[in-house]
Image 1 (cartoon, rainbow, N blue to C red):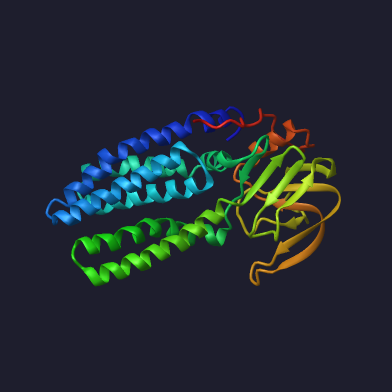
Image 2: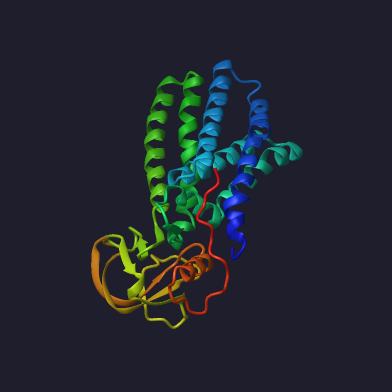
Amino acid sequence: MEGTDAQICTAVLPWVVRVAWLVVPFSVGTAVADALDGRSAPVQVTAAALLWVGWAVVVGALLVPRPVGLVLARCGAAGALLAALVATDEPIDLAIGVTPAIAVLVVLLLPAVGEWFVNGAAYGYERRYLLRAPAPVLVGPLVFAGLLVPVSLVIGPLLVAARQWVIGALVTAVGGALAYVLGRALHSMTQRWAVLVPAGLVLKDHLALLDPVLFRRVDVESLRRAPADTDALDLTAGALGLALELDLRSPQHVDRMRPVRRSAEPFEARRLLFTPTRPAALLADAASRRFRVVDQVATPPPSTSSPS
């Protein structure tokens, strides 16, 4: 997204996802209630309680955007979609139940919305730009983890409600532990940023760097879209998509993480690559902060305000 799309990010999209989520109890909830019509009262009550708790958690995440809220909202929307798919078999009912859940999930997966969440915890004049997930993680494990978190939290209590006491208690304990581990892994992916601060640019990426590194604006020669033949130090952690190249006036020390051994490897680098989810917006914002941006599309900087 470019130009006025920054205002769409901070003003329109959050309200789209909020309104769509308000519809979920009347679509997914109705479908689940119909599917549980022949079940025992404890199972129906437990299922209803789980749905309402999950719905309320996502409402809180959407009202107070934070990085952890992005994980909660995406997992909640994935859980709602799974519930609708499992609970309905008639085409019309399936369309009614699935459409709001799909709409919420699609909007939550937009880079601009992810940026809105992570900037809910930003300080002052800084602006955080999420970094792209590594390709090996994005194609499979990330999606699987997002779907497994809500499933692992629901199955155990439903088994207990169905009087499967032993297996239900075991599944509840294992599922809770699994959801915690997967939730932490998903949350760690929301902690990878390129941050524009008054002093310059900070790269914070535990997959590529041992520690966050500040590149002062006075030390930056230029910032640009990376050319295909660049020999810059690769800090993309294997992410796909357009990379940006940071060109420094003189070499700066960085400790790059080895992907296999998870140990640091020291480098003196003058050019570095990184992959924000919204490279054009970052370039526009950097230009407004007096960085020298090469081949940058002239667009207004993104707004630093967040909706209530």
